[in-house]
Image (cartoon, rainbow, N blue to C red; front, side):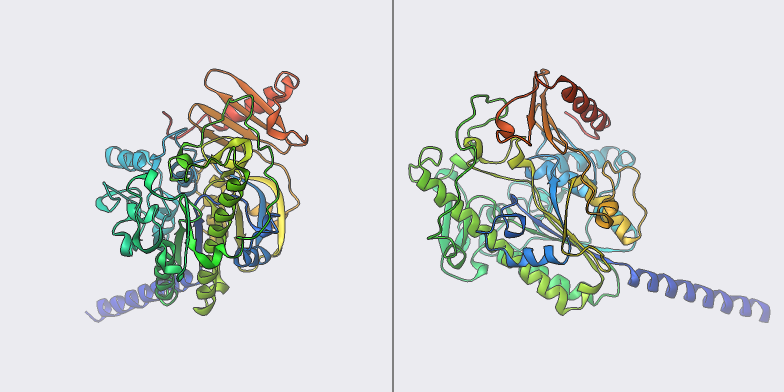
Length: 481
C-alpha cells in the first residue's frame, strides 16, 4: 500500500512538473497580431506616396520590414482572405471561397487542411477575430451575416466578434456611413462622405474599441494569443470623420498614371461596384476634378484606417505585449484610382494585385529595412509558423519569408494571381496574363508603358518560361471551379 502511495505521489509530481513546463513553454511563445485592412493599395507615405498622412503605419514600417512587392492571390476580398487564412491557392473566381471550404469541412472533414488560426489554436494559442478578417465582417453568413449556424471558418476562432452599434448587423456595418446609415440601395448611398464627429461614428471605431478590449484580456491570460483585427476602410463607400478629410481637401494631387481607357480591354471592366453608388451625376473618367475629389476621400479613409492602427499599436505597448508579439499589417488587395479608366478592384493589373505587407517581430535584425523580393499572401501562414516556433504545415502552398526577413536584398520570386477565367504571374520584370481561351498578354515593367503594351509576340521565350512557372504553381489548386 505504501509503495502504491509513493508511486501515486511521484506521478503527481511528474505530471505537475510537465504541466508547469508546458505552461512555461506556451508563455514564452510569441503572440501574433494581424491587422487586415480592406481595399488598401500601397497608398501610404512609407510606400512612396508622400502626400498621404499615414504616421502609424509608417512607424510600423520603421520598426519592421516593408515588402515593396507583395501581391495578393485574387483582387477581391473573399478569395484573397481565403489565401491569407489558409496559405493555399483557392478558387479562381469564387468570392465565397471560405463558405465553400466550410461546406467541404462538413461533407469530408479529413480532406480539408486546418486554417491558419485553427493551426495556431491546436498549438495552444487563444484565437480571436474582431471585425472583417474573413469575407464577411464577423465571419458569419445569413441575410445579415449574423447567423451563428453559418460560419465561414469552423474550428478557427475561440472568439468571433463584430460590434455593430447603430448599424444593427454586420451587413449594415460593412457598407455603413456615419451614425448608423446603412446601404440599402447603392444608388441612394453617396459614394463618399465626411461627417464631423469622433472615430466611432463609423463602424471601424467600434471594431477597434473591441480589439483594444480583447488585447487587454489576452495580454493578461498567460497564454499566447493569435489576434486578427479587420479594419473595413478604405472600402467603399469612402466615409470617415471630417478631420481626416480636412487633411486633403485643398491638396493638389499628382496626375493619375495611364488614365486613358485601354484600347486592349482584355482585363478591363466598367467599375461596376463604384459606379452603382450615388455620384451626383458625375463620372471620374471624364471629370478630372471629380476624379481628384474621389481620390481625396479615398486618402481620407486611409488616414482614418491608419489612426485605428495607431490605437492598436499603442494598446499593444501599454499591456506590454509589444515585446513578444509578431505584427503583420496586410492589405487584402489593391484598388484602381483611375488607372486604365478603372475605379475599383477585380482586375489582374498591377494596381489591383499589389498591396501593403509589413512584418515586425521581437529580435528582428533588419528593422526599418525594405525588400524588393516578390512575395505572395499565401506566404504569411508558413512565415508566422516558423517565427513562432510552430511546425510549418506541409499542406501550405506558400513558403516562409524568413530567408527574406534575414536577407532583405533578395529580389527573386514569383507571384501568382487569378480572377474569373484569367491567371497571372508576376516576375521581377514582367507580368504575364492568360485567359481560359489561351489568349496571352505580356507586360514589361521596365518600360515606361508598363501594362499598356502587349509584348507577347515579341518575347515568346519569356511567355513560355512564365507560362510553365504559372501552370506548375497552380497545378495543385485546392479548390477550382
